[in-house]
Amino acid sequence: MSAVTQRANPLTAGRLPRWSNLAVLAASAAVFGVALGLTAAASGAAFPVPAFVIATVLGYLVLLVLLSRVVEGPRKAKDRLMRNLVVAAFLLALTPLISLIVTVVGRGAARFDIAFFTESMRNVTGEGGGVLHAVVGTLEITAAATLISVPIGLLTAIYLVEYGRGWLARAITFFVDVMTGIPSIVAGLFAFSLFLLLFGPGSRMGLSGAVALSILMIPVVVRSSEEMLKLVPRDLREASYALGVPKWRTILKVVIPTAIAGISTGVMLAIARVIGETAPLLITAGFTQSMNYDLTDGDMMSLPVFVYNSYISQGVDAQAYIDRAWAGALTLILIVMLLNLLARLVAKIFAPKLGR
Image (cartoon, rainbow, N blue to C red):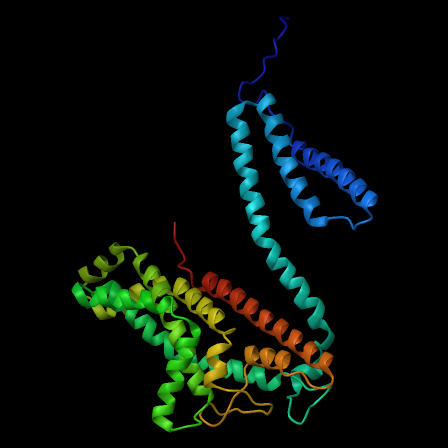
């Protein structure tokens, strides 16, 4: 039998093992941990955690690139450098979010109980009380804003995609772009001035807050719906026209059902974007410590205003107000998270089922 000569595969030769990243990271952490630890012990200062993290990351990148350049060559070393820079940027962007969630959960858990969600703040000056009136106000105001903004935004997007031509379409697109960047306080002042002219002084109510939020929602709904409608293949429209179906029915029966998943996701994200607005609701809806189910009568509390008011208007027992503020912030984050999960679920349910 002839001996089979083993040859190295040129595509796999000269590669670092898979565990090299972890090994280099551990070595960098050990070196800088010992160095900074000895320095801190000699000076009597605390261990510098931020400096340790930065030094470890930089040392890891330098060591890994040098090692990869020696073993794998300059091309692979550049690839490893850029890949690790992207991962580092992602982790850096994720750090504030993780810190925020840990802080809010840790401090908001003290009042996250049944009483907090079943009681209002009526006649409460110290411990106790709850956020029921603020949750009800937030849900009602946001629902009213959705009912106002979604039809307007969707019809505007349909016009821009299916009918819009010439200067009018360009003007609408321009003003939608302008509305996208409008400060929330300006929307609140507009809604407050509008209701002041219609109903007179002292006309703070939930409906005014809903109008302010709808101004912020409309451009988001228009943009998201417009992009989803543009993704519908033109062949579907032409096939419908070839069968003699009028354009309005084609839009209603073919275009919108095809894009409904993306449109629904855009609407949910628009709701999540405005549900945490404080400034416009503070101006338009005001704040109250009692339950108010009527959008057209009197001040109505919302969760963002509840958190703001609890923090700046601390009573004798300041810790009770701070605990309620953190618990309200945690409740608001959970509502936004549920809306994002609902958007993904809606997109999955209404996504077109493609045949073979």
